[in-house]
Image 1 (cartoon, rainbow, N blue to C red):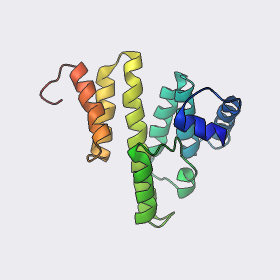
Image 2: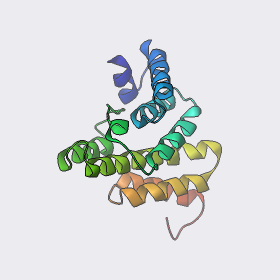
Image 3: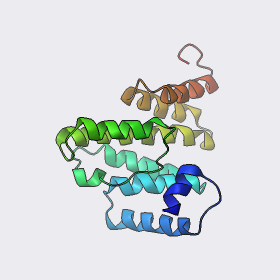
Image 4: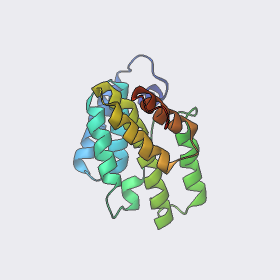
Length: 168
C-alpha cells in the first residue's frame, strides 16, 4: 500500500504512515518476540526521523541474538523493499537456498536481518556522535556479509572519521 511505497521511495508522508507506525508498535507489544515487527517498525521510525529507531534496531539485534529462534518470529514482509539495495537480493537468496521454516532457513534469515540491522545502526550511530560505535556495528555487519560493498563502505567511512587510516 501507500505506506510501504512511501518507506521505499520517500517523499511526502502519506496519511496512513502514522497508522502504520501505531500498528507496528501494537504488533511489537502483542508479540514482543516478533522480529519482523521490530525490524519494520525501526524502518518506519527512520523514515519519520524518530530517534527511537536506534533503540528499536538494538532490540531487533537482541532478539536476533537469542539462542532459540522460531521460524514464526522471522516470517513476514520486510521493508523497505528497495531494489537498489542488496537486502532484497539476499532475501531472495535465502528463500531460494533454504526450505522455509527449516533450521538452515532460520539461521540464514537471522544472519540476513542481523546484517541489515547492524548496517542501520552503523548509519544511525553518528547521530549520537559515536563513530567508534558506528565502526563496531559496521565491522559486525561486514563479518556477516563480507562480499557486500555498501557494507564495507560504511566501515570505511566510520574508520576514516576515527582517523584509523590503515584499517580504512
